Amino acid sequence: MDSQKTLSDVISSVGSGNRSGVLDEDVPLIDQEWDSLDVATLLIEVEREFQVVIATEVLGELRTIRDIKNFLRQKGRIEVQLS
Image 1: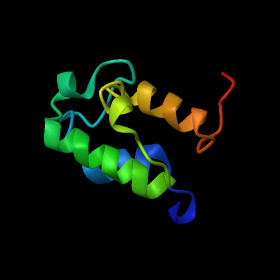
Image 2: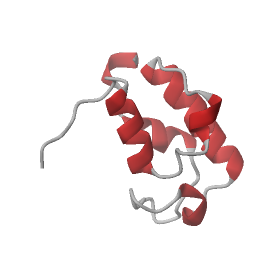
Image 3: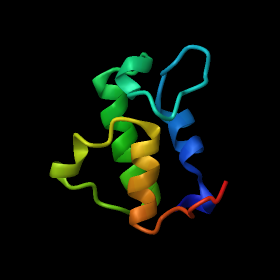
């Protein structure tokens, strides 16, 4: 991971996304003005930045920011925040 790059950094660097710049963690990215190419690019960047492999079977399950965070937590790539 490049100097502790966060998921927020990766998202910001990839997507045109929601025009207000604020994404709802629980709403599918497609429903927040991200197109399929933005989502695919995001997942490729997540793999690269967090040094994980996203299995083909899992791709369809990663629809929201929360889904991606949970995946990275399961892989031990981001810390669980207790709040």
